[in-house]
Each structure stands twice: as structure tokens, then as C-alpha cells.
Length: 360
Image 1 (cartoon, helix red, strand yellow):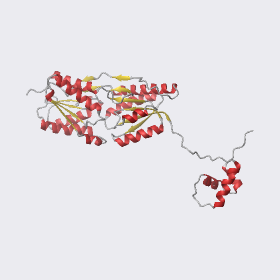
Image 2: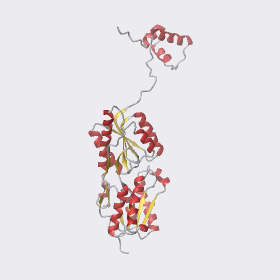
Image 3: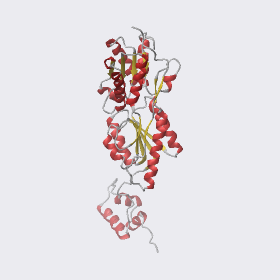
Image 4: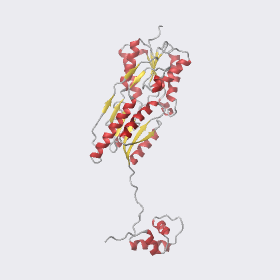
């Protein structure tokens, strides 16, 4: 026969006090002053009756199963909206929720999110950029499935949907060389260590010009590394293109083409040229990368590179879900095996912002 569970009400009745008094004394919450006699009487009654305090002595680990955390460096560039749309499309189809962590390129914010994610224990994590703390992410991936959307080999041992920006840079350069451009500029946001995609894009671009024998005709200009923290503002990439264009034109006035590290930078380049009464592309060609929706609008017509951003988001989420399901089948144990390593073939989108160089 099961013994009836002793409650705080039973202790209160035996000790001759109220139930709230029992609760405060046994939980050590002395909001009011109790006499020593009252405290002893309550503790003795509880002991005699075999009362077990219901207060939890340790916190139960929170679990956000069914939720995918997405780490994003900013929401000022439509590129990341395209990624997120693809991720959410696949997540919702598979009954997963998406929780967005916008780091705003702040190191401490990113580290704080990583610590919270470990405690919250979600089903999985998608990184839409190169992690600032790859060693933390690698360790976290031993407990929680992680997929990275970013540059090739940016994080070792983690499933990756690759950008291969070096190939993109090479493609842009080859196109300009075919048209006959020999003196060009490449403008970029800060080239910090974590911005591997930007650096790879420039590397591929410069390499193609060097191979063609025109390496001295490439002028690379970027904001200082210290300015990376400023990219929390909504128009910083556009401003980068605009401001650097003014500077590079003073230094190299006879440029025939200017390339932006992405479409937002290229749009800033475009406006800076137009405000200085340059004709595009008759006097200066302008190129970008990402093929944002705005880039194809009539009147902008930006030549750029399509690398299937939305599809990358979908595939990254699908890879993650497969990793999650594999982990559940193996009762929570991570295998450490690579499941997918996906790379897309970029495609040049030629529009009205580029053409043959002006005749000098």
C-alpha cells in the first residue's frame, strides 16, 4: 500500500503554523523574522513526518529541440535575407523552428550567443559566415550538429556549403580581360582575418590579371581592418563603395573598370561615378557579386555573379536536418563523419553596367 505523500500543509498543521511560514522557513527565505523556536518547531515537524522539500536543488538543462539556431553577421545586406529565406523554407517544411542570432559583426556578441546556444541545446546550428571563434564552434559541433555556409576550409571538420570566392574573383577578372580592360580597381570592405571570402575573391581576381600579364594594372583598395566593427550600420557597405571610389579616382584617374566585393559595394561605386558625371559603362564599367534582386532592376542593370544564395540556404538546412536525424538514430552520439561538402558553380550575369573600355 502506497504511503500518502507528506505536504507542507501537513507540516504546518503539526507545527501549529501557516503553510506559508513552513514554505519560507524550509526554503530559507526569511522575508519576515521568525523566532528560533518557530524555526526549530517547523524543522522538527518536517523531519518527524518525513517531508521532502520540493524545491529543485539543481537546474534542469534547458532543451530547445526542434529549433535551429542561425548565426548571421548582419541584416543590412539582402544577401543574408536570401540565405535566411532558403533556410526557413526547408526548416518549416520539416517542422523545425528557426531562431536568428544577429551578431552585427561584434566579437563579444558572437561569443555570448555561442555560450547561450550550448546551454539552450537546440537541434542544430547554421553559420552563414566564417566563425570568429572556429575552435569554439568545432567543440560545440561535438554536441550539436553544425553546418557552415562559407568559404572553403574556413572551419575544419564541419559540413560546409561552399562559396569558393576565389573562383568568383577569377571569373570577374577573365570577363574584364576579354573585353580589353587593363587598368582596373577592386574595392572592398575591411579585409580582416574572419573575412576569408573577401580576401579569396581579391586573390582570384588579381591572379587572373597576373596570369594575363597585367598584374600591375590592378589596384586594390579596402577600408582599414579597424573599420570592420562599423558594419553594424545599415548603409556601411554602400558607403564603402561610394567613399573608396572617390579616393581611387583621385589616385588612378584613368581606370576603365571598378569591381565591388559584393553588389552593395558595387551600388555605392555606381552612384559615386554617376554623381561625378561618369558614363557607365562608356567611361567606367562597374561589376559586383551576389546578384541581389535590386541589381537587376531596370536602370541599375549591374553585371554581377550569381552563386545561388537562396538555394545554398535550402541545402545547408537539409544537410543539417540529415545530421540531426542521424544523431537521433544513434541515440545522441555524433559520428564525426562528413555527410556533405557542397559547392555551386557560379554564373556570370552580364548586364548594362559593363562594356568595352573607353579608347584612350
